[in-house]
Amino acid sequence: MTSVSSCLESLRLAQQCALIPFITAGDPDLETTESALRVLDAAGADIIELGVPYSDPLADGPVIQAAATRALQRGVRLDDVLSMVERVSKEVRSPIILFNYYNPILNRGIEPFLKQIAKAGVKGLVVPDLPLEEAETLLKPAADIGVEVVLLVAPTSPKKRIEAIARHSQGFIYLVSVTGVTGIRSGLETRVEDLLLELRSVTSKPIGVGFGISQPEHAQQVKDWGADAVIVGSAFVKRLADGTPAEGLEAIAQFCQSLKTAITST
Image 1: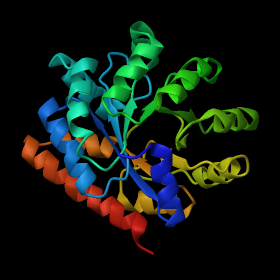
Image 2: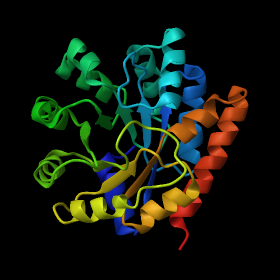
Image 3: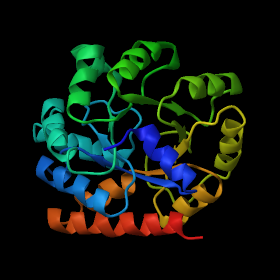
């Protein structure tokens, strides 16, 4: 498994856009999550984002919140998730990014947390409630340990803040395409194209676009606007939760393939 930045650089040199599916660990159960990581890797995912269930997920919409609640009710905890990741990371090609809120990191201790996830094979980290002003406390030890911390740019961020986030983000820059939480939406906001152009004017780092992308047509549009990566979450989480685990795995495999086809077709 390569680093997040190396993966994206290879795809950029090949003039390809990356596909980054998101799933919630432990929903419907950790065994299914383990299978899902392998399925997504085989179905065309370039990087996989794995959400750690959290009781107060401020950035998550109803689909992912419900998945996290179900996982927590089943007793899924970070140590369980990382034990599973340690098994899978030895077998998959796609780098795994952990999506984790800041309080659990602080409670465990920044350096012990980073060392634990790195040992499990995690290559990247997204902390949605990490303010830029506190990011350095995580960025430096993460760089030393070998975990790339991806920072988020909100559509309402002023230019100076965008420049600062772009400068500090590791791996890639996560451009949030909508104001608000994650979720399935019928269409994309056209200002995403302008935001991509604005980011391009201040950084050469890869840019991933997420929140609200739920159809192959959305993914293709984001790619055509110039994104280096397309991030899709709620649409995967919903498919994996519907029906039996076997049906969910089949559904995410087909959906992953359809998204990959959409962003690789000319």
